[in-house]
Image 1 (cartoon, rainbow, N blue to C red):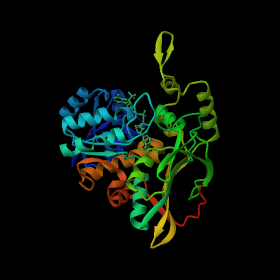
Image 2 (image 1 turned 135 degrees about the vertical axis):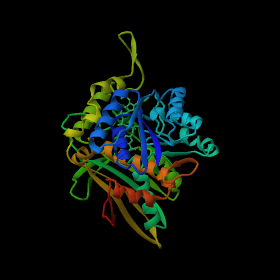
Image 3 (image 1 turned 60 degrees about the vertical axis):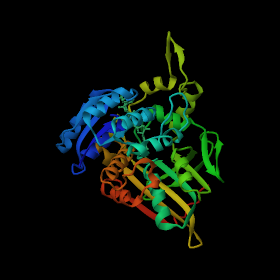
Image 4 (image 1 turned 180 degrees about the vertical axis):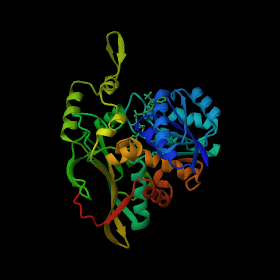
Length: 402
Ligand code: NDP
């Protein structure tokens, strides 16, 4: 049993807190801290009424290392679950090192002024964490996160060598708004508007954002969607840790209305990340846009439909070529009934809880900085089935992917 400090009380933070509170035999003491403490208190009230469990709350500015260290020293958690924004990853890692606390997150560090999605900033902490006898687990959401574990699981159980990887993320949900993002709008739009990069023959190849698309029919009648190739951070770690991969691509579904709005917003400069002067003050267009858009944590009651996210791997087993697909489908309304959230936050928050559980139970605990695919996928996959994200394997799915 262990005490955890969750930092970030947004859509994902709410789910992580709910799911940890459901497993008292592992997470017996939970503190939820964020910049706005009232959001933590609201989540704490929901948890109390749903599960009867009381969690503590605190206020913290996660950009401020001394403030974080003071909080960690007073709370004395065994592990910090960072579900604030990617901008805070390094300050929270620094504070964990100073306070002697294990670390976990769901998205790689990003500097505010460049949307780069690269791991080198966090991989540079490898020696520091190892020397301190502490573990940092990177990217324990769904994608990255479960998709890395799916890939490692397929590689371990179905192949001698993997050659082609396609990660396909379909959100068949409908929230009824003409334009809204399912997780933090600023992070989402930075990701979607970035140049596309995919791995091919030993290097990343750049193509314009949203320039390659195909049609994908999901299993279990989730539907047929247009999926667009884009860069996603797990491509970097997976191609590093599985050097036999010749080509790796990430695909995400987008509706026509979302893309049309994004195009117009981009054309008028509303998705820009460089500050501009407005009425005597500096504002960042994308941060202003975030204020206008629906808060993702409010989409739960109105979102219907399912997500379908998985990894398709092609490679060799005993000299023969084969293809294996592992995926999960998740129903937005079922998530809302359980933890008052839509499925995007749910599919991120559950793997975050499971990653934390793997560390605290010692199944994944080892000093250093690790990506999900470097650890044994089996206990994580078992827990996905137990805690709300069951998965299926289709051998030879017959997809005709680009
Ligand atoms: P939200 O914007 O809903 O929540 C972020 C929370 O972090 C807010 O409560 C915010 O506080 C808090 N926060 C922001 N800055 C600070 C700070 N300086 N100090 C303390 N708290 C701060 O985002 P989401 O919940 O949608 O996403 C959370 C994380 O999950 C992001 O890093 C995102 O990239 C990641 N993610 C990962 C996915 C995956 O599959 N791997 C998928 C989806 C998301 P306030 O409310 O006061 O602004």
